[in-house]
Length: 620
Image 1 (spheres, rainbow, N blue to C red):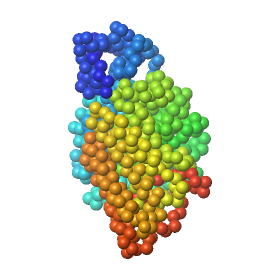
Image 2 (image 1 turned 90 degrees about the vertical axis):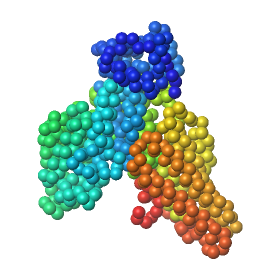
Image 3 (image 1 turned 180 degrees about the vertical axis):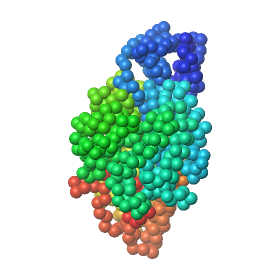
Image 4 (image 1 turned 60 degrees about the vertical axis):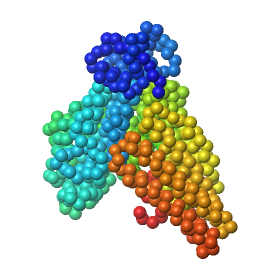
């Protein structure tokens, strides 16, 4: 991290607490002979960096902290910045519900780097990972935040000029909250959807809102309501008969809104359920260009909409979908994706190919608020630290309009103190020679190659004739060069080095194992044992990273996955030893004919995003 000596002069009171945190943690020191820094609140944002120091005019405090980051650029030649940000609000949604609950220090670190980027909104996505004092099973053994935890984060964010916004669920995505046998069955429709119309449900939601109101200072709240796929089709149908989902959605939203307004809050929801109402397939993005009147009638003027779209790279698709959303509410928010949810490694190229056209269309449509989302589906295998590169892209588009790799790298180093190359090269874990995607979803090769069973290789027909061993070996060597003063980032780099080493060995195994005969089985035994040891090394590196960034809850899932993989290599070594000793003639699961799984007839790949789908043809 680059260290800069500064001397603050005439800083408004609202900046002092945040400035002190930057001095404590982000490489700034105060010295009488340091660079003079002055700031004043004004009607526009401007920065003057010269031999006389740094002079900042800011509209909101976060703009001052972004201006500070210009002192950490490699070239401190004089500059003047008068370009105004494109968006009124720009920020991140952090998933704290998919097994990984970030520590308070991790959130604080991300908030500081957000401030240096100039991002002013942070949503905490918490399905059941916040405290409701009257509901002991809500977030039980999941690492939930206490109300005091959230208040502390809220204060910290406010000192940096960042609005911390609760992002909860009040209909679906509540499987972990509802699965306990001690939870009243009357509130369940399906395993993850609450029972619309049940008074006990609205008492539950009232308690959710009471907790949120006590923890956050903002009046804005995201109440979710997305992806309620089976709304009304579970216990509700047996109790009340079939009622169309749009009607249930409208009734439920009305009741929730009464509660939200009772608590003095301003709600927003994900928009997908409205578009699914009129989709011919039940999808999100194939709604008609002109929405039917019943869908328009279902929308509420007092509920903001968040249009999420993580997939498209064609500007025309964004244009079409934004026009559709304007029919529901012209003041909608756009949420793009940081592709942190496909496995242990994010997809920076996918972030770029979707975010840049999306942000251009948001600017063209006059959208005032944008978010980047860092989901953690299927176990939160990718650290939230990996979201920082995409966050920098959102920030640079907003403030400078420059999103080329060189500009982002310079700004990333200034705002995070880390190697942009180490983050951008994460693509190399998934973009392998010979792999062509079938659709807009990226191919998460690092996940399915990691978890593929060594004795029952589900993907061998898909990857026939392809070799990835040398690719991952070179990638492991590259990651040895990345180091950091920050223990969390150092753990991140060591994890990716270890992951690449394991993948290299695994790929060597998968390329040789099916052809092993009695004559060369001894070598296969040694390779299996080496792979088992590498599983242990990777698990330890992952555990170290998890401890540095997350609460301990949730790692048991990762532990089971890699411990299971190690165990399967130990079994593979025994099988190969039996082959060597002539106890068996072949290993049936290896020699069985393999069929295509994730490729089409032209050899184009889909991803495989669930661990359980990567390891066996049997039910897990």
